[in-house]
Amino acid sequence: MSQLSALSDGQLVQRCRAGDDEAWHELVERFSRYVYAVATRGFRLSEEDAEDVFQDVFTRVYTHLGTLRDDSALRPWIAQLTRRVCLDSIARRGREQPASEPVSEEIAAGLDEIDEAFTVREALTTLSEPCQDILDRFFARDQSYRTISDELEIPSGTIASRIARCLSKLRVELEGREPPPAGSRG
Amino acid sequence: MTLRDEERVGGLLRVLRPAPEGWVRAAQELPAARRSLDEIVARAEADLEFRKALVADLEATLELEGYEPRPRVLDELRRRLPQD
Image (tube, rainbow over all chains, first blue to last red; front, side, top):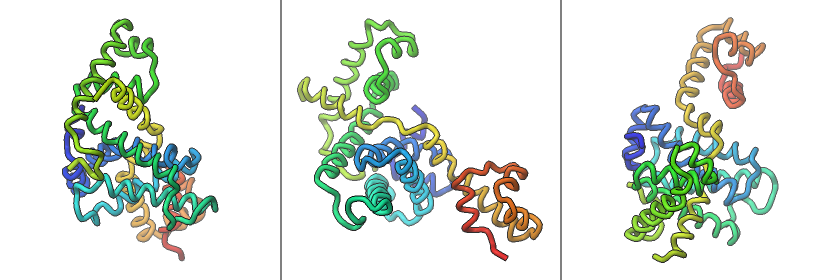
């Protein structure tokens, strides 16, 4: 885990504003999966539209970072921005509803799940690096036991138990947390 | 939380998959790309020959000058370049 990944959203915003490129790298890394999921899974945009949305969101974040009033509110700001850019993309394509109308219940449920997943991912960052790595490989990257075993050079027979142990630690970490917030890193 | 909750946590971990590496890299390089853009625009404003070359063939001129002519950079430059 890099030193920057331990920074709160607020601290990260301050470093980005000061022109720290490494902090910007971390900001993109921290939110890239979220923006990607909202575009592709939440709004089910095509890869082409999703890429435009992805770049547009980060360009706007970079350009308007100075206007963010509360540095700790980075997450809800990016969430709102991503949704708006997705709706604009849909409106441009002439599909479904105009950008100003609320999203359908189905899409809203998907977005809620993505927000919940982001909270789980934040909790994941509190675990040891080996735990973060193995859970990410197995769940988010769909790697097989064999691939994990080969790449991490650990016996394949121990992978299931390692995953179970790490998942249990993650559950314990999540138990003490409040329900999913908008902007929990602060 | 129970075992079922752990399954749910695992399910939520599956929701946030990595974005394509190229997308992430392009977004991470935004500050450097912006600086290059500002530099090109400033030079185009100050140097008539350079400006003419850019207007005549934007992509080739950028490559010649050592800049990577990415589509987004080209679009942005077309918007920002001074028009004679």
